Amino acid sequence: MTSLPRAAVLFFLAAACALAQQTTAPQDPEFASLSAPQGDQSKQDAERAAKEEMRAKIELLSAHSKLVTGKPYSANSTTDTVQTLADGNRILHHSSSVIYRDNQGRTRREQTFAGFDSGPGETKIFIEDPVAKAVYVLDPGEKTARSISNSREVLLKLERSSDTMANVKLPRLDEQHDIVKEDLGQKNIAGVQCNGTRQTITIPAGQIGNERPLAIVTETWFSPAIEAVVQSSTNDPRFGQTTYTLANIELKDQPRALFEPPANYRLEK
Image 1: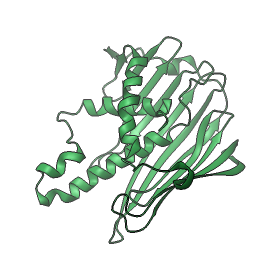
Image 2: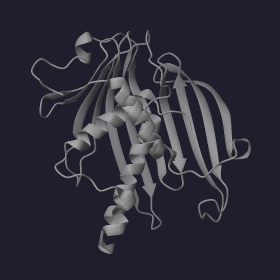
Image 3: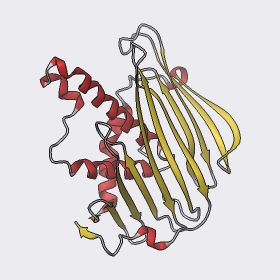
Image 4: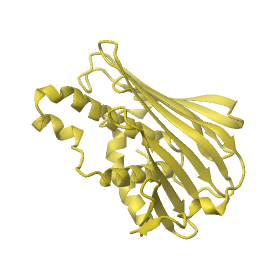
């Protein structure tokens, strides 16, 4: 499998930092069923759904791992996941972010994570400055800026460790027969020209206990003008449908101050 997208790895790192600040470590859904009472089955299902939502976000946030310069922009992004249960009930997840990139390839992502138990969401700000070789995770609530040293090494480690989650334990597939790619042509989305592709991955009957073949369909619209995915949707019968969309795209350079910790934030390492 190809390596995780650069912006996606940055988002995963921001999420990891946010989780690290919790007072108790979250239990891994993969092992929760070994120790949790049967009455907690709904909680286990919710944890698994949240994990799959994170996987989908990581896959959809960007299309390339390379540093992009000379193509500055800003945009709003939304990610929505809908999982339909056997009884017709649905589990919905929504997240949003604001993305900035300047002419020299600096990036800023203001990511709002959904709240738990219908509580308010939490926003984290992730900044990467490839010019200064600096990475920061900002917490607006606490007014702190966490500086991450050796950012490239950290990102590469996360990239390697996150591949397992992105794979979602797919069985070995024959690319000539089980993976079909289609060119969808071009269309204008949110004011930028995009190239569309559709990939259909078919899991043959019996490979994961499925009685019939399962088709996982991903449609992606990529804009060369900003070197980023503008719209994407993935329909996976195992986990539901996930859509990712950019809106309010502005093609202009961004203020330098956006890529620096505010003066009134406490710097942590």
